[in-house]
Length: 225
Image (tube, rainbow, N blue to C red; front, side, top):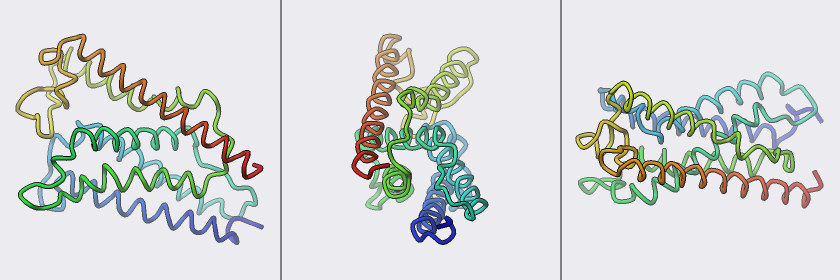
Protein backbone atom coordinates (compact mmCIF):
# COMPACT_ATOMS: atom_id res chain seq x y z
CA UNK A 1 0.00 0.00 0.00
CA UNK A 2 1.31 3.39 -0.95
CA UNK A 3 1.34 6.09 1.70
CA UNK A 4 -1.31 8.15 -0.11
CA UNK A 5 -3.72 5.22 0.26
CA UNK A 6 -2.94 4.65 3.95
CA UNK A 7 -5.53 6.31 6.25
CA UNK A 8 -2.94 6.53 9.05
CA UNK A 9 -0.60 8.45 6.76
CA UNK A 10 -3.36 10.88 5.80
CA UNK A 11 -4.33 11.32 9.45
CA UNK A 12 -0.68 12.07 10.26
CA UNK A 13 -0.68 14.88 7.71
CA UNK A 14 -3.94 16.29 9.06
CA UNK A 15 -2.55 16.13 12.61
CA UNK A 16 0.58 18.06 11.58
CA UNK A 17 -1.54 20.65 9.81
CA UNK A 18 -3.63 21.11 12.96
CA UNK A 19 -0.48 21.37 15.10
CA UNK A 20 0.92 24.01 12.76
CA UNK A 21 -2.30 26.04 12.89
CA UNK A 22 -2.50 25.93 16.70
CA UNK A 23 1.20 26.76 17.14
CA UNK A 24 1.00 29.56 14.57
CA UNK A 25 -1.77 31.28 16.49
CA UNK A 26 0.07 30.78 19.79
CA UNK A 27 3.26 32.30 18.39
CA UNK A 28 1.43 35.25 16.84
CA UNK A 29 -0.47 35.96 20.04
CA UNK A 30 2.61 35.49 22.20
CA UNK A 31 4.51 37.95 20.03
CA UNK A 32 1.67 40.48 20.38
CA UNK A 33 0.92 40.50 16.65
CA UNK A 34 -2.72 39.52 17.09
CA UNK A 35 -3.10 42.64 19.24
CA UNK A 36 -1.52 44.88 16.61
CA UNK A 37 1.88 45.18 18.22
CA UNK A 38 5.13 43.26 18.37
CA UNK A 39 6.87 42.31 21.62
CA UNK A 40 10.61 42.86 20.98
CA UNK A 41 11.74 40.38 23.64
CA UNK A 42 9.64 37.57 22.17
CA UNK A 43 12.60 35.68 20.59
CA UNK A 44 14.63 35.88 23.81
CA UNK A 45 12.69 33.17 25.63
CA UNK A 46 13.42 29.46 25.16
CA UNK A 47 9.70 28.68 25.15
CA UNK A 48 9.31 30.70 21.96
CA UNK A 49 12.54 29.42 20.41
CA UNK A 50 11.51 25.79 20.97
CA UNK A 51 8.05 26.44 19.54
CA UNK A 52 9.48 28.27 16.51
CA UNK A 53 11.89 25.40 15.93
CA UNK A 54 9.06 22.89 16.27
CA UNK A 55 6.83 24.87 13.90
CA UNK A 56 9.58 25.01 11.30
CA UNK A 57 10.21 21.28 11.62
CA UNK A 58 6.56 20.25 11.29
CA UNK A 59 6.04 22.61 8.34
CA UNK A 60 8.91 20.93 6.49
CA UNK A 61 7.73 17.48 7.60
CA UNK A 62 4.25 18.14 6.20
CA UNK A 63 5.69 19.29 2.87
CA UNK A 64 7.88 16.18 2.82
CA UNK A 65 4.91 13.89 3.48
CA UNK A 66 2.83 15.50 0.74
CA UNK A 67 5.69 15.29 -1.74
CA UNK A 68 6.53 11.65 -1.05
CA UNK A 69 3.04 10.30 -0.37
CA UNK A 70 3.30 8.05 -3.43
CA UNK A 71 6.07 5.95 -1.85
CA UNK A 72 5.32 2.67 -0.10
CA UNK A 73 7.70 2.96 2.87
CA UNK A 74 6.79 5.08 5.90
CA UNK A 75 9.66 7.49 6.50
CA UNK A 76 10.23 10.07 9.21
CA UNK A 77 11.48 13.38 7.92
CA UNK A 78 14.76 14.42 9.64
CA UNK A 79 14.22 12.30 12.80
CA UNK A 80 17.06 13.95 14.77
CA UNK A 81 15.47 17.36 14.23
CA UNK A 82 12.05 15.97 15.15
CA UNK A 83 13.15 14.54 18.46
CA UNK A 84 15.21 17.64 19.22
CA UNK A 85 11.98 19.61 18.86
CA UNK A 86 9.98 17.08 20.89
CA UNK A 87 12.40 17.00 23.83
CA UNK A 88 12.81 20.79 23.79
CA UNK A 89 9.04 21.26 23.84
CA UNK A 90 8.67 18.68 26.61
CA UNK A 91 11.18 20.52 28.78
CA UNK A 92 9.36 23.76 27.95
CA UNK A 93 6.18 22.14 29.26
CA UNK A 94 7.79 20.92 32.49
CA UNK A 95 9.68 24.11 33.32
CA UNK A 96 6.74 26.27 32.30
CA UNK A 97 4.40 24.27 34.53
CA UNK A 98 6.73 24.61 37.51
CA UNK A 99 7.68 28.25 37.05
CA UNK A 100 4.80 29.88 35.15
CA UNK A 101 1.69 28.21 36.52
CA UNK A 102 0.80 31.41 38.36
CA UNK A 103 1.04 33.45 35.16
CA UNK A 104 -1.51 31.41 33.20
CA UNK A 105 -4.32 33.58 34.56
CA UNK A 106 -3.81 37.35 34.56
CA UNK A 107 -6.43 39.90 35.65
CA UNK A 108 -8.95 37.09 35.83
CA UNK A 109 -8.38 36.01 32.22
CA UNK A 110 -6.64 32.91 30.89
CA UNK A 111 -3.52 33.74 28.88
CA UNK A 112 -4.24 31.36 26.04
CA UNK A 113 -0.94 31.65 24.19
CA UNK A 114 0.84 30.43 27.34
CA UNK A 115 -1.49 27.43 27.44
CA UNK A 116 -0.90 26.75 23.75
CA UNK A 117 2.89 27.12 23.76
CA UNK A 118 3.54 25.43 27.11
CA UNK A 119 1.01 22.60 27.00
CA UNK A 120 -0.93 22.05 23.79
CA UNK A 121 1.90 22.21 21.25
CA UNK A 122 4.32 20.08 23.32
CA UNK A 123 1.57 17.50 23.91
CA UNK A 124 0.64 17.40 20.22
CA UNK A 125 4.30 16.99 19.29
CA UNK A 126 4.69 13.96 21.58
CA UNK A 127 1.40 12.47 20.38
CA UNK A 128 2.60 12.85 16.79
CA UNK A 129 5.54 10.56 17.67
CA UNK A 130 3.34 8.17 19.67
CA UNK A 131 0.59 7.80 17.08
CA UNK A 132 2.42 7.98 13.77
CA UNK A 133 6.15 7.22 13.93
CA UNK A 134 7.48 3.72 13.33
CA UNK A 135 8.91 2.56 16.66
CA UNK A 136 12.25 1.04 17.60
CA UNK A 137 14.36 3.15 15.25
CA UNK A 138 15.73 5.79 17.60
CA UNK A 139 19.55 5.57 17.85
CA UNK A 140 21.22 5.20 21.26
CA UNK A 141 23.14 8.43 20.67
CA UNK A 142 19.93 10.31 20.00
CA UNK A 143 19.36 11.73 23.51
CA UNK A 144 22.74 13.45 23.33
CA UNK A 145 22.13 14.86 19.84
CA UNK A 146 18.74 16.18 20.95
CA UNK A 147 20.55 18.58 23.30
CA UNK A 148 21.63 20.67 20.33
CA UNK A 149 18.88 23.30 20.49
CA UNK A 150 19.16 24.06 24.20
CA UNK A 151 22.97 24.02 24.04
CA UNK A 152 22.93 26.51 21.18
CA UNK A 153 20.41 28.68 23.05
CA UNK A 154 22.42 28.70 26.29
CA UNK A 155 25.72 29.34 24.50
CA UNK A 156 24.31 32.17 22.40
CA UNK A 157 22.58 33.79 25.39
CA UNK A 158 25.62 33.69 27.68
CA UNK A 159 27.92 35.02 24.97
CA UNK A 160 25.52 37.71 23.74
CA UNK A 161 24.71 39.07 27.19
CA UNK A 162 27.80 38.15 29.20
CA UNK A 163 30.45 39.13 26.66
CA UNK A 164 28.78 41.70 24.43
CA UNK A 165 26.23 43.21 26.81
CA UNK A 166 23.29 42.66 24.46
CA UNK A 167 19.95 42.99 26.21
CA UNK A 168 17.99 39.73 26.07
CA UNK A 169 15.58 40.26 28.93
CA UNK A 170 11.95 39.33 28.72
CA UNK A 171 8.89 37.99 30.46
CA UNK A 172 8.11 38.91 34.05
CA UNK A 173 11.78 39.57 34.85
CA UNK A 174 12.46 42.03 32.01
CA UNK A 175 13.17 44.87 34.46
CA UNK A 176 15.40 42.77 36.72
CA UNK A 177 18.04 41.40 34.38
CA UNK A 178 19.49 41.63 30.88
CA UNK A 179 19.21 37.84 30.65
CA UNK A 180 15.97 36.15 29.58
CA UNK A 181 15.78 34.42 32.99
CA UNK A 182 17.15 35.44 36.39
CA UNK A 183 18.66 31.98 36.88
CA UNK A 184 21.00 32.68 33.95
CA UNK A 185 22.27 35.93 35.47
CA UNK A 186 25.53 35.45 37.45
CA UNK A 187 24.91 38.82 39.09
CA UNK A 188 21.72 37.49 40.71
CA UNK A 189 22.31 33.78 41.36
CA UNK A 190 26.11 33.72 41.12
CA UNK A 191 28.29 31.78 38.69
CA UNK A 192 27.70 28.61 40.68
CA UNK A 193 23.95 29.08 40.47
CA UNK A 194 24.08 29.46 36.69
CA UNK A 195 26.28 26.37 36.36
CA UNK A 196 23.98 24.34 38.60
CA UNK A 197 20.88 25.37 36.67
CA UNK A 198 22.42 24.73 33.25
CA UNK A 199 23.74 21.38 34.45
CA UNK A 200 20.33 20.42 35.85
CA UNK A 201 18.63 21.42 32.58
CA UNK A 202 21.04 19.35 30.49
CA UNK A 203 20.61 16.35 32.81
CA UNK A 204 16.83 16.73 32.49
CA UNK A 205 17.15 16.77 28.70
CA UNK A 206 19.28 13.63 28.74
CA UNK A 207 17.00 11.75 31.14
CA UNK A 208 13.90 12.61 29.14
CA UNK A 209 15.70 11.67 25.95
CA UNK A 210 16.59 8.22 27.24
CA UNK A 211 13.08 7.73 28.60
CA UNK A 212 11.72 8.52 25.13
CA UNK A 213 14.34 6.23 23.59
CA UNK A 214 13.41 3.40 25.98
CA UNK A 215 9.68 3.75 25.36
CA UNK A 216 10.26 3.90 21.61
CA UNK A 217 12.21 0.64 21.58
CA UNK A 218 9.80 -1.07 23.96
CA UNK A 219 6.89 -0.16 21.68
CA UNK A 220 8.96 -1.33 18.72
CA UNK A 221 9.31 -4.78 20.27
CA UNK A 222 5.63 -4.93 21.19
CA UNK A 223 4.59 -3.94 17.68
CA UNK A 224 7.21 -6.17 16.07
CA UNK A 225 8.82 -3.30 14.17
